Length: 337
Image (cartoon, rainbow, N blue to C red; front, side, top):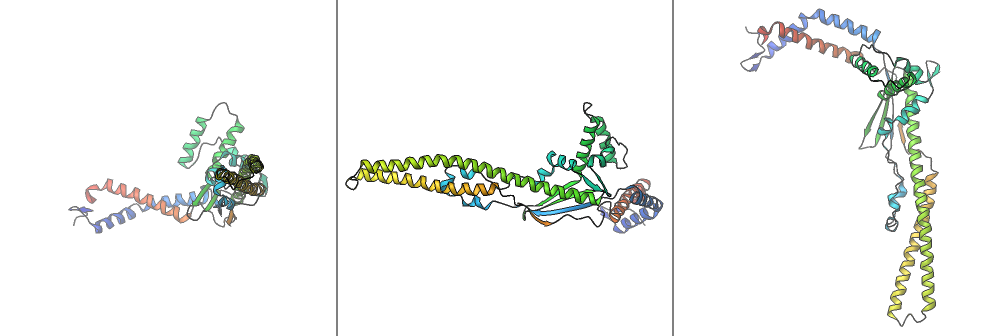
């Protein structure tokens, strides 16, 4: 009976199952050896990491912006939007945030320290079991600018390491945003996450305050201009009445009266609307309420997030199966193919 897996352009699933059984049983020592290596890696070598997360809504918009009338739009006031327009994702990747976090003090294992002291000593470490980390370390050492000193190297190393430990996810449909921080210390993950959230809030409040201040200054300038125009319109109408006593007998004077009243009415509406917007801008400038709405607060992780035992074991098994299948085909290709 033929053991060919592909016979007459068809896959023989019985022979295919025999092939995998042979690959599993024939290389059982290899599986046992790699399983022991995995146990050593998981329990003795791999550094467990712990993830904390915080989720919030940020689909905040200033309700006062919906109250703009067409007459205010005509003077350019609607272009000054005081709603939040910054991206949380971009802020999480900014040097501003990373520098703030690096400057903070943290309690790690009952001791107060900072990130440079905690992570910075490994800035010149090269040997890593992880091939990716090993190559990155070599590249980092080769590409350092010779003009920077050791403290700058440590700071850059910590900044890059910190950036890689922060991740972000956004649900554009609901507006829910989630920030994740994963480090080798569960308490540090929680503290970092709390500092990140506070920084995001402060920055968003500052943006709202700055926009409101900008809007207030613009409104004040326009209000002064409209006030002068309103006074001119009032004076023009008074002067018109003083110079023209028989308005009812002259169609031309009646039309002129309508034009002057229309000009006065428009400037009066502008003055009233701008005065209202100026008061609103002053309130917005002093408004320090949080424009983010917290859903789930940060907490210390109950379980390590990486490495995961069964997922790692499955990966090792699949890699072994692939390796054993390759060797089986290579060694006995006449038998199976």
